[in-house]
Image (tube, rainbow, N blue to C red; front, side, top):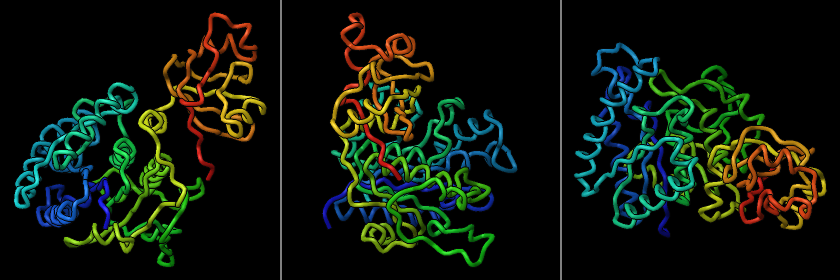
Length: 364
């Protein structure tokens, strides 16, 4: 098997017992599986939940706290407990973990994004195991990932992973909620995530975790857009990740043969949060999609949002969302320049979005 770069995401429900404590037996199962992957020569990054779940008992909470200050306090206690446990277990296999705590800012700001990429590359080159979690102790609501499913998707895109494996307590995606409908059938393979799939993917997975199947579908869609194949499911034993990688896992595979390999600057465009919307006419749409041209002010007829030059915006036509790109205008500048020919705009850039900073969104 060729060497691959793999991001493994493990949720709180797969790491802890019903009381919210770290379950070392379950954790050891994951550690053995990751060690097996690394012994086969693969590069592995672990996105691990469990900090809040591991810490709230230590603070005297009877259940997972619901307040921001409670979650952040529990994360502050639990993150060190979680990493200590990982260090002890991975040391059995001579694997050195490297803790990385991320916030949304690390993906939205270009320099932070570049620095994060460089750090991951250095760690992987030296055969370290990055263990990644959200920096819950300092994150504010506007800058959180929502759950670690999306964090794992963003990380997999950032590092140009070959595969994202989301381990959960449900063996894949079903066409109905299997907890409510015994006739529900599992979907073994998907080539895209469509909007109607979210209708039967409701509900969180457990009282310990935060993300249900909806969050996993959102993460899978983000990973696919970044060119990463996804598996959502379960497994047991030291060979479970090897089995998943070989295509025989107990879950749902989400992939297609035309996944684009994006350069770093386009990865950032794909993964960062957008700051606004631009609406363009049919001529500009054809120039962007069919002729590989840049977007000019003349083709823009509406602007939404408050953005600055260098931000990422979504581009729409009458046919819907076309893609996103790094804009060279502020929203105020573009509102003044839209619909006008470039030769009449001497104080503004020629392009609203240069073709090298444009990313088409694949239609579902």
